[in-house]
Image (cartoon, rainbow, N blue to C red; front, top):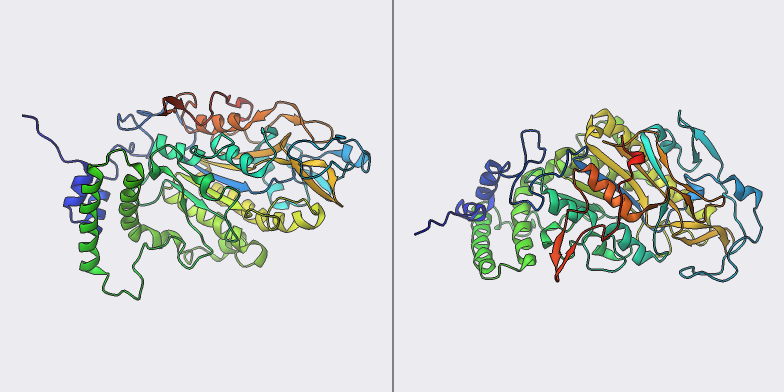
Length: 479
């Protein structure tokens, strides 16, 4: 006769639910999670069974400029645009994905200057990021397979142009698990003005267990994470009543789940409920920024209208990874025709307010991470879904362009001041050192200690992976 040992979930239920669950969860927080320093160790319950090689990176902050940030107006200086300004050098027929015919060559309306010992050219739109170029590694010839927002955003986040596939954050959560038990492993901080193209599809777990999808924290709402605490209008739902209710719901959920072992959405709801109970203790300290110094508040631009929103989310990203969240994604710009990086109408009018809103907070984030010693195991990624054309659209706007754009990396395992790849003379297509989206994803996973070819999940008879059948680690930007 075999003895059936209780599962961790059974133990939590037996502890009485609610705060009883929280107490036991903390006792078991290290179970299967890692060593004394939080580094991953071999555990057969993990998909990886441990890391494939020593990791340089433990946590990631991804800064996503939604809409297609223009490379030749930010980081990719092209003096040839001034030389050929006004000339008809673009394609004669409207390329697929363009929203209109290609106009004449359009020079950047913003002056560029060289910065740092690396001599990196940066436009006047990014003075604060310019101060950090010697810490950055630039991928100057990023290329994607589409110049349509929805498919391109899916590609950059999930490695595929269609919905239904897990995003990078979900793969990282699935492969590595949590660092701590009282915060989500994957958090998304969207623009309060709206979600990006594809809405929550960019944060999806796809066919992975649903619990690995991004936890959306909307700082534009009175309750950034709804329903962690009972409404003040229901005073009875507190104390013993709250604990008894949680315990009852927990027992019912588990009984229901036991009969449906393949329902990952149900499993995700149970895990979400348990996490919410633990976050009743951790969330107040994480989201309350009143303990930050006046200098920190000023550095992130929280006292300025233009930078307060993105600055608050960058500061929260730092607070989350400092407390144990593994992957944080910070979005700039909603979907649509305004208030993002999709500058069809006028680069000279539309790009400056977007650049202004993010530049100081990003500079402050990089300095803050460095000063706190967090860059020793944290990776920061700045990217967008595609670039823009060197040809005018309308007056001085720019159309979509998947042919070349820029991404930079800062932090653990990154070669400071490095640059890889180059676009052509006008900044229309890559010329050398092309980096695909799958290459970038493979490189990020590599820094996290994961071989991208071995992180797979079998679904519909196929072993799927983030990088599909593509991807090479870009070693030229690795330390």
